[in-house]
Length: 337
Image 1 (cartoon, helix red, strand yellow):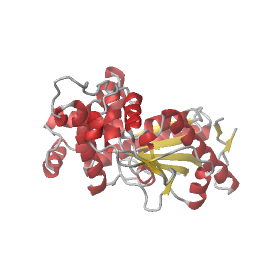
Image 2 (cartoon, helix red, strand yellow):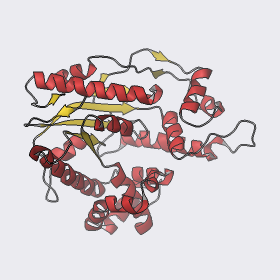
Image 3 (spheres, rainbow, N blue to C red):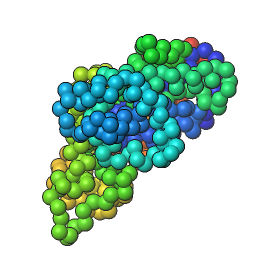
Image 4 (cartoon, rainbow, N blue to C red):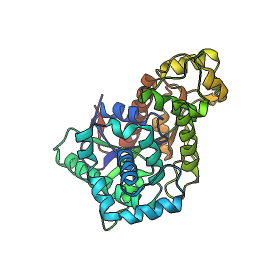
């Protein structure tokens, strides 16, 4: 099944949430239905690395000092760096943007206004070009996926750098939450770093790669809530997709989590971190996408215990349900085919 664009407003899916919460997997699932994803994460990651190289920004540096260094570099230089993300990926591949350092530096620079201003302007430019191609029938893309922090607002509000993008309609809005230790596990799995092996002479947990990733996940989660610009939190009236039943991880569940993350079967670090705490269970629930659209609410997922195939099915189903509701209500002319 895919989406056919028949004129009028262009459907948009907004994907928000924390790092390693599965937004990339959701975007892939939506691409199968005709969506093209626009994210800002790669821009912030590249800027973090470049601001570290050019003006010495470091993870954990006081906000005011980072701000001073950002302004030392200046808006024009930041804009040029953002515009060169595609070129940098073409030359170096994508892996250099997904190291632990890149993640930490991204979180360090992304709260700063000058950085966000130029990243959002670049986003509007890219989205606007594809939106026009959709209207003209010059692309196989039939709807737009936004992957990032409060991007609908960034699209709607332009400035002298780049104007707003018009003619879009958000039909599905999803916030994906995740337990910090699961985020750390997924980060290590992505970087092909295993858990400490039981019985080996071990480093203190905080000195292991998993411990470092866990610390950074905790810092990121705290900053998402406390930052002044673009807090990364679900909407106050978000509709919980997951069941209210919270099943604690047992030993088998912990081993399964470690194995599913590609990190072996040593669960001692997980137990020591209190991962036995309850986490909501998410399964496919029919009608949630339709309900969220009709009530004008964001869907709230907790992907900590969701298998990849479940994530894909949930997001695709929620989107198609919301499109059907939008067409029935006259908000869209696009139709599922």
